[in-house]
Length: 426
Image (cartoon, rainbow, N blue to C red; front, side):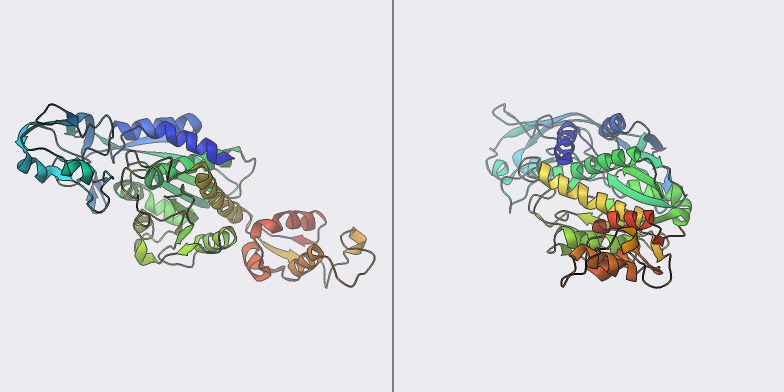
């Protein structure tokens, strides 16, 4: 089960402190590069104008913690990197409890969870802790130690281009900017890494594949600002990959258009994977699909997920872990939902019967020579399939008409092509 390998890789990436910039992103991308040697890691300088945004300063964390009045170290960044408010500015000093509380963040409704919070675009410092720990803070002076650095550096992202027979591209994007959380971070880049590895091992691809690992929002905006003209010309389908690691549900979020090949494929795969999958609207968006489908960009990008970000209680907290939330089985399901989607896009050709009238299947050994009262189901499926091969409908459209998963037609297509009963101009 490939989900076990993906889960092991997620464990390896778990301790790394990722943010939208910094050493954690580079460490993560370099680990991905060990599996995908052809990945190229790029840098964009701070203060670079990218559409309506500006690439921020780079953020480095050396250490951060609080010392209580009785000398106990708490909110230790080295124990859990969610304790430090993302992009915290450096600070060293002593504060009374009332003053310190202005810089503390909790989730009262989830008293055992450390929240994940950031302040990317306004300078401040702070710590995140459980409500339970917050309620037990004692009066007195607290030593605050935040050894961080904000400086003009770079924003990093990684890109892998896998060339197929033609220049039309399928686009896959995932993000590498969250610290130690499992579904709403590590599931995406780990699943995509193994999808990319599978694609690189295929002998022949119809489409080319553009795969990127980026910081969320600012990364997609940066990448689009550099490549959107080429992307608009080449990309015919694609998926934004996030939250594909739990085993509670499957979810679909459409492109803004809602009627692209990516949307059709996503709904088809999920219908046959889990008939009870959750279907969201464009108004429920929240990840990088916002950028890829924005007016003026309008790429055909849909989203396949397990449980959607924000729809499970552990989301954006320390409870989003690799034990109770993300499992090998969950990752395996996310991987195969996406892999089947890519396989359909690859194989989604239009076929046309090569003879006039119904083909004589018996002389080809494809039809029983003895008629029976009840024809076999596979014979019925074959003849129904042939009857729909008029050159105007794609494979997935025929599968929808036949009410079968597209992948159950692959062997039949190969058989009929080998006997020259159907053909394609593609």
